[in-house]
Length: 424
Image (tube, rainbow, N blue to C red; front, side):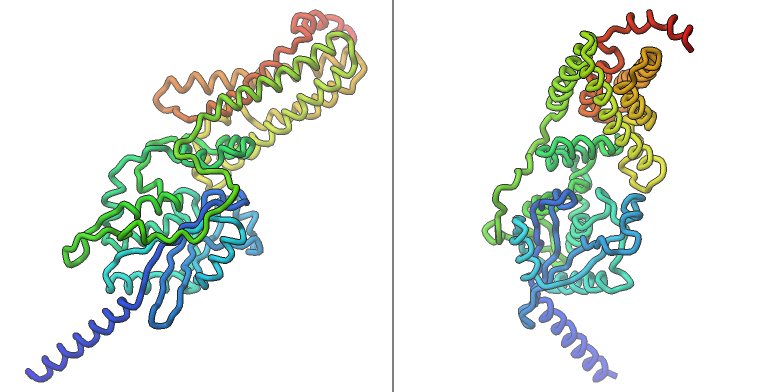
């Protein structure tokens, strides 16, 4: 009996030693890749790299794989049911692709005990199996970056989340978004227009790590205690961080988001001044002024109306939870689309009585928009409404005011109501 116990202990020791040796042969690194050119690459990318020194391999475990060729890709994307996949590939190939696309790439080595390295390798190998590799992507809650964040937490026995889940972030999710979109005003406006107040609530540093760069920032400063009670710095030395490539000529990522609303307000006032000039020409009986004014109202109704239509769709019929609770629905409804044909008719009609009808209907539509904007501002006096949508309001308010109270003169239009009634 004693011999059997000794043999069993020897076998367990040999097995443990073999596992330890396997772990010793592994190096784990986090690869953080900078923004790319396409909108869906603006927030960067991240992956886990595992080097096997014995086999002389380096594998890139990627949780952000998708394909436009997937079945019903665009339908699933629109409905917020987009499937992402996990996969493994050659690290060298991924480095080459990043460099070719002018994307920065850096490697952060992780100081983990051998048994932990092996545990993480087994975990990610299980993730890339066909039956486990797919998951429903959520931009802020479940993406390539949050999956790597969770692996770091697994490797540190929950100490990563224990620390950063209890520290308040310096920003909101919207602030983080704007740090990356500031250089493209049109995209910045429309993306933030579609996102509701759910991304304006206070968050923890843990939530910041939907961004790859934030994972890189936090693992670089993080200390943990391993199973043997040894205090370790997760990324042992800054000097060991390998900056493989630095992108050239790309817009910087802001450390602090800038206030975008003053830029939108100036742009809107400039446009409003041009529209006022068109109405002034019309007031002076210059036909081109009426045509330009009418088509200007149609164009603005097209832009804002379509934005509102998409917003209503995202908020009411999809799983895009970050579009919920959006006060922009108050002043940008699909009703604005009615101003498109009305503006064209306003521009092209020659009959005064019809001109008056189009004029009044257009004024009413834009006046509803103005009232909606002011309501969306006033409700922020209540604690339940806190959406940071001043940029959206400042873009639309001056333009809507010009179209609602056209310089041609509201009183002049009202005076024409009686002859309008006689001819109708």
